[in-house]
Length: 158
Image: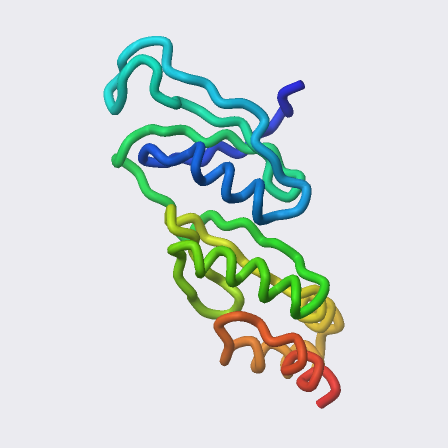
């Protein structure tokens, strides 16, 4: 059954490769279906992969091979909550190590330009506490690329 609301992500021509990478990288992720174009279209030919239905961390998505007209921006990102440093490291390293790039404050981009926030729960929990705890955690985060759990925990303790 197709979800009532599905995120549609525009790719140049690599939607299937991206979907398979996400399915291998993130828990509760999979490639559900690959659909080929029934006829030629502006950026492809009949038989080319047109769309891919996939799930990323439980969120239904469609990857559209729409050609080079549009790229991803930081205006859209997936935020993935992590439970420990090992999970943070594994996901971060998978994205960055597979042709992606680091950014700041837990953000990175995959090789297709899609932005990801690899966000430890220790950070979101600290921010939810408010006051001095949130301020210290926030200040610590602002110095980081990949989030360091131990440094956030130290900031929370003051």
